[in-house]
Length: 122
Image (cartoon, rainbow, N blue to C red; front, side, top):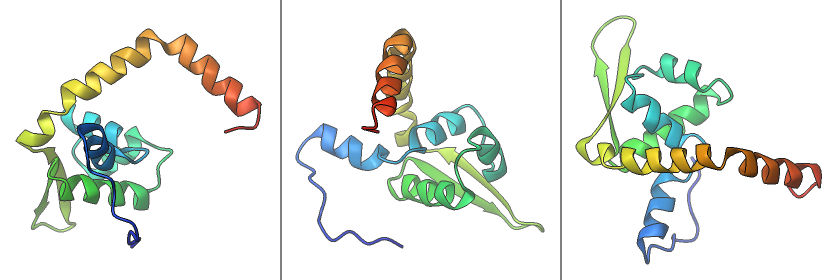
């Protein structure tokens, strides 16, 4: 497991939320868990571009940050489900607002992202 050599800057709210939500799939994981997709296999199907290993790492980080809980059922084969904590539920309106902003600016954002990728700066 990767161990940080430099402590993160935690001086303001933006630093803190960046530290907690930084990761390619974390926002989507929180959103899908809130929508009722709680099993690892369901989350993998919703985010097929992510490897199981990366999803597991990011789920563990979300759990460590107290945004989700993991419940392991004592059955064979093992069954695992994730759910949002009360604290985790408080970030869903923020994610919804970001998604709405992305939807409202979809054409412009897609254009600047593709332009940047085509120019080789991505």
